[in-house]
Length: 231
Picture 1: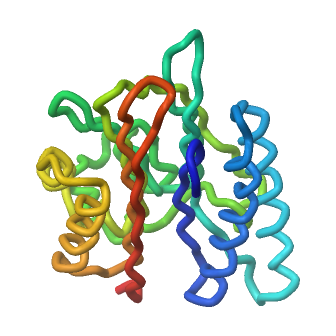
Picture 2 (picture 1 turned 30 degrees about the vertical axis):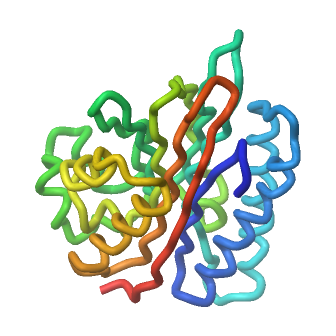
């Protein structure tokens, strides 16, 4: 997507169905990139459009395809920059600033529910057999609601959006090390994707990195994806 809207949609339901579902999600957000200023209602409308369009695929396929979504729109409130964040599923958003990596989205997944209940640690979740099972999705679960958040976007900070193909292969510590290496967004993206593929590449690896350069600007940005059959 173009500034001020960035997103990752990770298709579910096999290559052909997941590919169509994720494409429809991205297309549902395209009009936001032409807006001078994005409002929460604009993001809500795009998500509703995506839900309807992906759910309609159930008539075409034997089972309804689905897609995760994590999106961040750069907005100004009282002269200060923020990320208006929305997510459904287990694609993630992180911020990096001052040497600190923070996950600012919450996974909608079986393992996250087990972590919240105290039955599983984050380290144990990495190898859990149900780590790819999501509890919310666009299309496949049409009643799924997005979580919203407003997160400061300070100059000098970085935004990372990614599919679970990255976080299933790399720990937060490994991601932090690459983000803190002061490479350009393009180089950072390619390094993250290459590292995830080298670690196993068991799933699609999609990464978007955005640098916040100054007040009112969120640029440059870079994105990349590597298709891999899920193991």
